[in-house]
Length: 303
Image 1 (cartoon, rainbow, N blue to C red):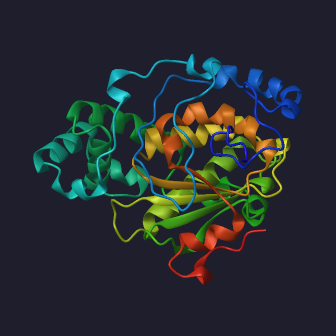
Image 2 (cartoon, rainbow, N blue to C red):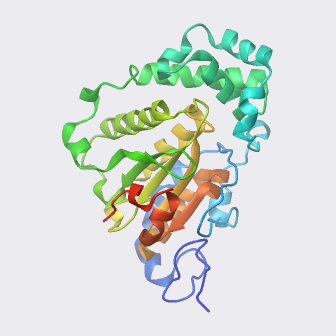
Image 3 (cartoon, rainbow, N blue to C red):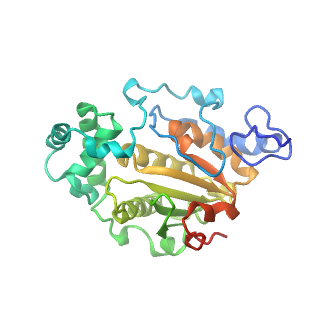
């Protein structure tokens, strides 16, 4: 049968060996070395997500990546169902709010109680851990810029490139959908500050669109036409850290559309950064994207 040794990737022309497929070793080895210094020891909590396709396997990362750092005990958490958010102890939420300070939700354009519940949920009800993580997030967000992010911070031409946008329709799970056309993101074409501002603005626009303030979002990464000039590891690290540190429990699913063989190398580099978030990743064919929506006509047009 077809080889499936690429951890959820489409089958290769020949079975994968060691870390990379033979045709890719010489191309991707320098990229692997480039990304050593960017690895950190933060773990990322995730929950399992059902999908119409095979999910990326958790674990089995190359030994060289597993050595990047051990998970801290307090970060080795499991996800609590979103339905339990409303049942969080009111006193615990109030304690987090008091510890974080008054009107901290304004930094994210949100309400204090909503943020307190999200971080308390992320920390499995540990008030101290939730308070500390929330205070760090609020400090980061205030330093990053006002909420909502002013459009002048990111460039008009970057917006018009359609590299990242909030889709008009929800998926079949009722989640707002962010679409990322990866081939339109070229390393060095725009300042990192502009790309990061566009990323944060899009995430927060998606959160504002939610009917349930404790809901989650889905991200569609369109990998059609992907090349190594799109493999921006610095920005990928920012995105992973933002979702874990500053917007915890908000990612519900990530769909990688039409991933080419060339994507195997970058994926093996990025996957260990995701830690357990990797279980939210699904590889999907473009023809199956419509199945992610209640009505096929609601699916984004990908090319």
